[in-house]
Image 1 (tube, rainbow, N blue to C red):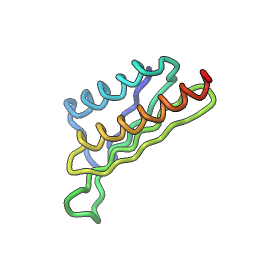
Image 2: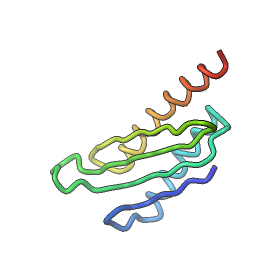
Image 3: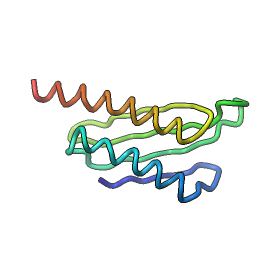
Length: 98
C-alpha cells in the first residue's frame, strides 16, 4: 500500500514517519484491498495540551474512509486514528461479504 505522510507546519523526524507507516500498513491485515492512504500530522496552536492532530484517509475500491484524532502526542493520535479506521474497515468488509 502507498502511504503518504505529510507534516503540516513542522518537520517530522524519520522515527515518527516510520511509526505512522508501520501503524497504517497494519490495516492491510484486516483488508487487503486498500489502495492508498494519506496521513496528515498537524499541530493545533489554539489548544494548549492536546494539540497534536493525526488525520488518516484510506482509499478502498469505491470508498474512502477517514479518521481524525487529537491527543498529547502524534504517536497516540495516530494509534487511535488507526484503531478507528480498523473498525471502519471491518464494518465495510462485513457489509460487502453479507
